[in-house]
Image (cartoon, rainbow, N blue to C red; front, side, top):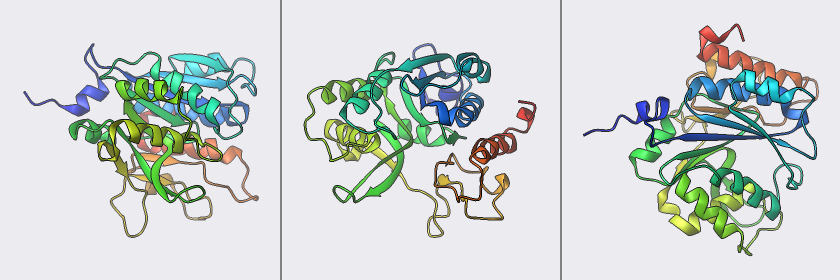
Length: 266
């Protein structure tokens, strides 16, 4: 029997679940709402949990807004995120969420609130190739020269999420600032080996078929049409000072409506 992986992710059988965790805070609330709407359209049967920062929570009424946008659950974490998700306490806190509900064969996705998940094709490739983790690889040189999985969006099996959480409890080999994505990649690679992690690479002129990219805030000709074929688009790059921050959520909305035209009433 040949397993249609697209159908598994879009409409999973009872034995396979997809869990998405979106970590956000007050300033990113408009972006997070768009992130939820987009993820819900791309993976309509996923369990989407928005994890707000209890130390800098979204505004009153945020839970209702997120649930109306398509989230399944809204929770507030209390661990110290040290700004942009850094430090051992933060890493363990994130992994505790990723590991808490998933069975071994389930899929767990961590998604930044300023990122649009537009396709699950890369996750299908992870499953087809028998890998345990997948995401976009970047070069990290601030601590050691290493190609790791960037934190904008990554997926792993429920089994690996649970193993990584347990290993993090006794992990002592932290990097200097212990950024979440670097440390979770390092934990994962020590458990399953780098050969069992699917590394995608971001779009560049020399990699025109890449499925991951970042919205170009410096361009005056950028349009959703130019980005709708990508699987994952992050809007988290530094914006020029002359552009209002509210443009981030608006651009995410325009991209979502370009990919899903019937969604333009939301």
